Image (cartoon, rainbow, N blue to C red):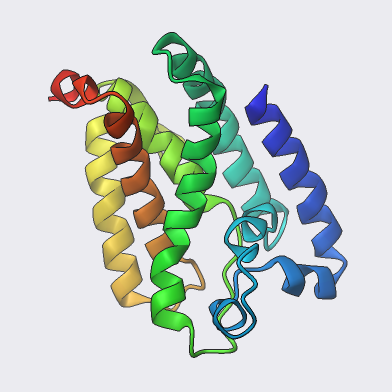
Length: 194
């Protein structure tokens, strides 16, 4: 239910921003404006804005694929909907802290998209079932634990390389948050994971 609500709000907001540059800039993550003007809402609003329909589709399809499952798992483990909401939005916030620190003096830096939050949900699913198959490149099934290692290495490599207008650091930090958060709620999960 929560997954569907977030997807609906994100799709509507993203489509509104596709044709409204002013709204896009008002909601985007711009560290310079957060530091200068205290626009802290941007830590959340940027996750509802996407660059184009492909960016939106990939994020929302991945979120739908893992979000509904994780909502049920959080219920089964007694962590509830509030914890799932914290997982999603916490992943979004944590994914942007690095940018706030490193890019706050750059008035031209902009970040958008729910990738950090989606990475958090995906990696939380790996905590609960590390050997479940995840489709690499949406085609090749590999164990979640292997996917996690490759994904984190790829994010770090691409973040250092740069030049592709993708916030790989947000993916990385969102994923790390998604791995750690459920373990903080239920420490026994780490033992089960190992």
